[in-house]
Image 1 (cartoon, rainbow, N blue to C red):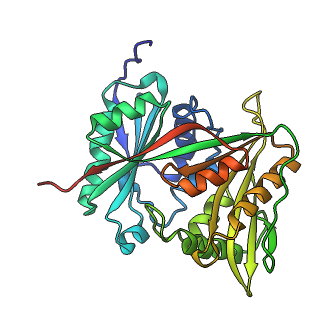
Image 2: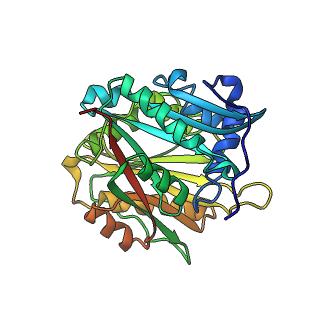
Length: 325
């Protein structure tokens, strides 16, 4: 491993919207080595920073070395999580690879965790991919401990997908996200929140946050709703990621979120929605389809494996107690 570049005249500043291109460059360089990372666009970074109602500039830092922007860190306090009773908040740090291990990342961790502690948050949460050795080392060094693992699963298409079969009385409604009315985001948020209320780490997701995310970038999203008895009982959100410019990664797809209301589980609806998403992506020419699942969700794991998905890698959720004894 080569030695990190020396940094001079280091400055820590709270970012403004005029810094969004700099922030995007840091995110993309910091995550470039992750297997499923794709190049993010400024609108996508803006969606979960300046456009999010809970984003606060005083909880974010942009680091400069001379005139070059080299790192970004953020402590994000989700008010809906706190109101729901989750006494925690997320922390993220991104740093240009050639500038790592210069001591700046430790200073950023201290600033972000100090901000969260000052907001009265009891626990900080952070996540790393198993191949991201730098981030893992940073988090363990800062006193974070492992809380949960997630499996990133992949299905590499070698032929036609299996046909989805829904139970009698269940009808489906597929909608493209692009140019959809705002009501669709409330519909997704409502069934997502109903479906995931008993899952690990659940907290309600506001429709506005979904809208900001789904309307940013250049990927193509589609949602399929399952309906029965005059109401929405399940959904699956799928994403088609086009090939990247400049000879980057090939076209990939994701089954981003899949949820079934508790009242309609164990009827095969989740599996049918999964296969519906796989079919839609396959028909669009996608040959590699990914999803993320809680490693302790044995039922979901079995369903995904039966649909041709295999575990490829692991992501780890970390936490750190911020309450001083």
